[in-house]
Image (cartoon, rainbow, N blue to C red):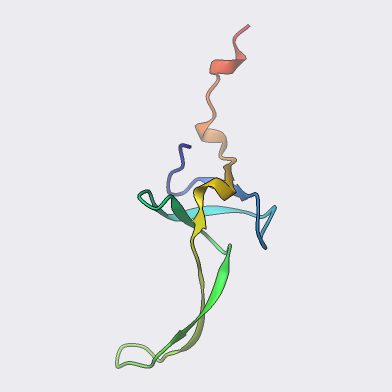
Length: 82
């Protein structure tokens, strides 16, 4: 699958099934990716000198097989020949 950072994808399974979003980050070795505002989790952070701490929400990783590329730019016209 040719997925790149910034492509639009649609989630096929899970609690966010049917939602679309933009790819933020990809880990190719583990076949995982993060999508903007999809698969949100709550993370508890300890307070440190740099940050206040508390409960924050952030995106979690999804497996590449659970998404479908819907970006129009990546579609080729090779199959349109008659």
